Length: 177
Image 1 (cartoon, helix red, strand yellow):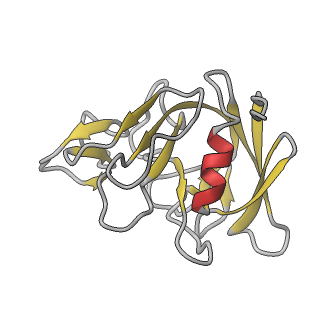
Image 2 (image 1 turned 180 degrees about the vertical axis):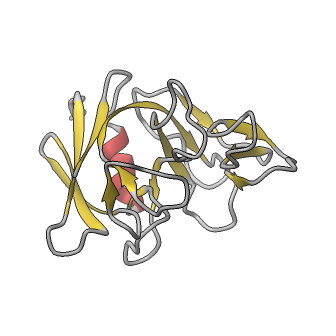
Image 3 (image 1 turned 120 degrees about the vertical axis):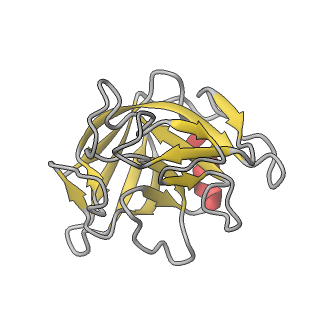
């Protein structure tokens, strides 16, 4: 039976450890990790916090060389070796997908580890983009033990696929502070 789509997925911060939490998507509850600084109402580049608020889910990316195409209602595309994400506030392409090589500070989307094998792009700081307000806010795969991130929300690999099945073009994510 195909899971039903949800309109909002919520991320609740743990009251015990603000770097951990849970995602609730309908009847699916998933453990997650957050940024090393937990969550923030005043997100800034490099602060290690996930921004509090409700955001659109823009699209998902995946490594086609590692896994089959995930099932989702989101726009979905394979990650290319030349994909990067600008996290340099002085770059006019700040907080956008870019093509590598690139001389400004950026993250490579094609990684040797498995953290970006599946990535959901969360619409933080997108309309308009404010330089220094934070970039590359994703929901992606976590390290073993779900260790804290630089500000993203991370889950275990089997869980992200189950979550993607419940996400459509109108689904939003709410980070509860």
